[in-house]
Image (cartoon, rainbow, N blue to C red):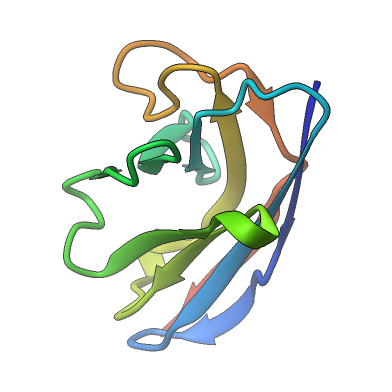
Length: 123
């Protein structure tokens, strides 16, 4: 089982920054990929970033590329999402996700999901 606990959401004005954190608590070593999805009101969940913990490679969706950066601290079992130049359209519930193989959302839905943290961006 993998447990994911998000923190760091909140409200910010457009152009501002937020940093989301995800604590990866696992009893089995089956979370090689940890990432972030988001779901805006009335829209489907979308994968926006992922990091492959064994090699450190990353994936960032075009919708946030250049503004959002995913990183990890393996010693602390933490994964972060630094979000800069936030826009009102970034308003969504953000979920930390994990999977044994891929969690980017490009191929299938990740296996493990956190409870989510709300990000609200206002003009």
